[in-house]
Length: 119
Length: 312
Image (tube, rainbow over all chains, first blue to last red; front, side):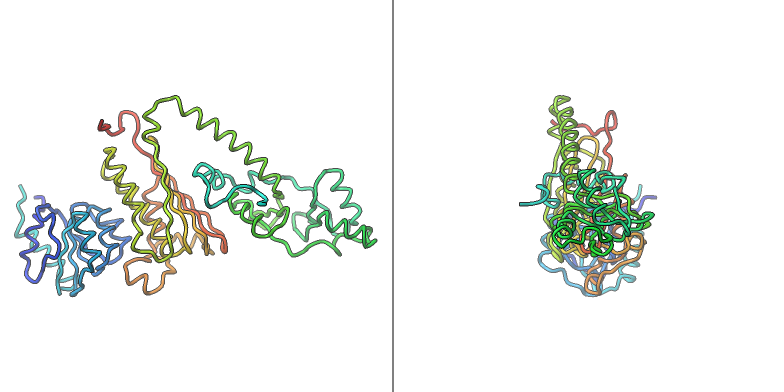
């Protein structure tokens, strides 16, 4: 069974707020949790959701290089305006939450399981 | 006037490439004509005259003690001590080059130290050659001539080759996180437009981004250049210092010199150089403390039947 989820579905996760949703119709297939940008570049799968603390412009840049389609900013971190703008330009969805990375990862996995439309 | 009319930091890519590819050992004069410490200045003078050279290193069994120049001889003749042993009057405060350094370092030394020649030592600190500005000019002329022929040979093959050849340079400043990634982004766009597979584009873009970030985080500023032709993408980062004291250590996964602020941004995880190497088909790093670091990564592009379809 292939895990697959519309980014739209992430908006429904309890405690998550979408702050940039220009490409919400995108489909995602996996999650990846990391705060090290080199690690994200090296290891984040394409078509994935990134769970991270890093709320700045460069996170969008590495996410874009890795093919990440959505970023979940944890622990109440706010996305600065230049980050929002870059995400819009790159077609990457941004979500904010007060969950820490662990809690957010668990919720993401649950979303994949319940919202799975695998064929 | 400059000793060598080439700027090792701001020249066309083909020259920068050459200056980086050529090592001091490819250019230096070797073997070296040397004197021993007990030789008289008169003996040294004869060595210079007979060999038409203007500087003689004083060395014994490969160990370098000093260097005597024509100026030392002239002063000896004026001062009437031409029969003194050379060790009493030679220059012992020397700047030396290492045979494995890229030629670009050698050239900048001529500008920086205003010496006419530099003794060249190998890793074991043995004298293996001497580099004069004449050696540099002569070898550059030969190499540029070869390069010119290579470039010319490429020309008539097909016009498409030229269309597909792209070279772009970016200036990267220390701590300018805002503009980091511009080059990686541009390369990604060009490769996407030419229909290269996403996995390959990611390799190139990740290597480029890591190189840009290294310049931003660790260098005093530098240039990032990419060159693309139908066979390969070449990424070249050249900075102005401070240089890496121990490259082997820097290559170790997890080793970092980044400060807490850099780390809090998610950089400085000690993975960058390895990320570049892992994504490249060919990787090279050269560094000298006080001078700078040059990193080069080459990624081969699929050619022939594996080449991506070109959109008209």
